[in-house]
Image (cartoon, rainbow, N blue to C red; front, side, top):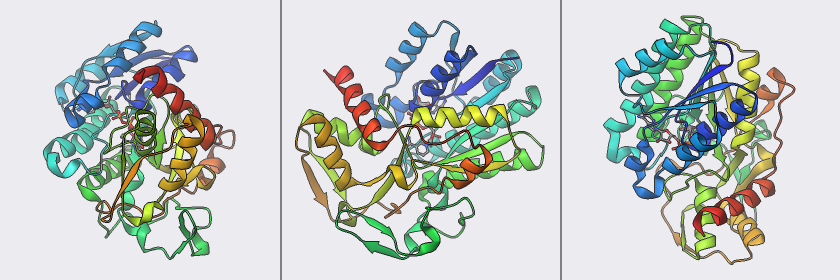
Length: 351
Ligand SMILES: NC(=O)c1ccc[n+]([C@@H]2O[C@H](COP(=O)([O-])OP(=O)(O)OC[C@H]3O[C@@H](n4cnc5c(N)ncnc54)[C@H](O)[C@@H]3O)[C@@H](O)[C@H]2O)c1
């Protein structure tokens, strides 16, 4: 059981990064993925390339072709592997895609999470369980915060949010999207397994998690997709808010570093907002400029007046709770570092 980690969604952005991170530390790594992302998003979302890369480069990596909706399969796998830590990143991750595939969305995000939690409780109850949640659990409530309009971005007017959105922000009585609601169900269940059964669980409510291994598509992974459009000379469609909507971006490597800190010193039923924070935030207009700076190619874009349903106007995570619980952790990769790596990543894959 020692130094054995089980990672769901191992072929995805966060899952694959966490696989490599723990493998580099000498751990035995078990990944679960069934390339469901290609079902959700079509061939553009295919993550087999990443699975093959993990299998080719990590000798202590084992791939398990399992759908987390398969309850018996999850129970059986946990019983066989009995990992020392579980990192759950498999999901239907798109806010906009969920409404059209609501059964798949809920079965994966909510029921799949329960399958893994209960399998963990039965066969590895002392092992830390890290769940990737999302800032969409706050629904569109952040849009009620008083804002100020700056030249290229929106920002909080209310000084209470000077450091961003904290974990105490209400998840109740707002519009979440179907995706946000299925993630709320998972988030609350992960907290409950911590509080009710005393399992060492935590929810990481992500802002924009990204990096060179992101298979960004229009409906998920804005920075990765925006840079792909830039490199291919393809038009990026901007949806509402004058293009000044703000996102906080964190490199998957910094997410993996935090997961490691939590696994080394776990707590029960914790919640953290994990994103790039104010320092790594940018508006979409600002992201165009950054992409142009690194690629040398002007960004083509069109503007659609209507914003995406429930889309945040300004969101950046307050990172103070993460820093206070785990003082050795902080952001290590800046926004320009991230953009430069994504440009290199797409150049290596696309060309
Ligand atoms: N990337 C972001 O900006 C972001 C932001 C906030 C939260 N999150 C959360 O972080 C987690 C990881 O996101 P990501 O960007 O790495 O997503 P991703 O789509 O890149 O990876 C998810 C992986 O899970 C797999 N998967 C999906 N359904 C499955 C199922 N039923 N059984 C087995 N495997 C399945 C997919 O094939 C994919 O490889 C998700 O929970 C997501 O909601 C991501």
